[in-house]
Length: 139
Image (tube, rainbow, N blue to C red; front, side, top):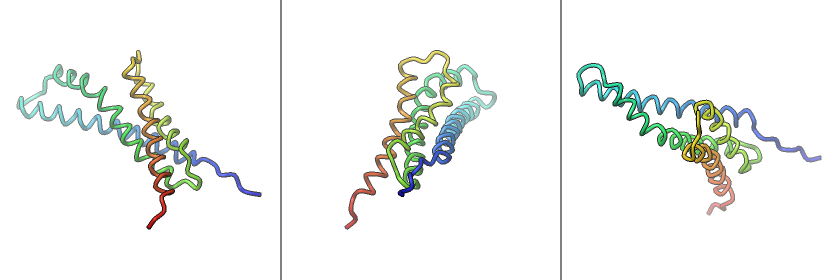
């Protein structure tokens, strides 16, 4: 009897959450770098209104882009190491990475929903990247 292949659930959950945490660290580093630059220019305390304006402009774009890029590589890693790679493994990594984002949304708009859908789509792309490379015969 053939053994059924199971999804690497632990790997899917851990890499999805790790991608989310690293994307938060990237956002925090960008914000800290901007605040530090303002402080160096002002030679003192930075203007909190400038930091808030920068955060309101940049974070809605940087957050989903950083998360989707990290999910792309996380899904690639999970699918590459799986015994039976499937496209749904990559999508699941993207879903796990996008779920904690829901905690930070108060009133999601169209841009927020698009940002949420970007992570599973990049997970699918990462899985497709690995599976398509496995099917190509080497010369």
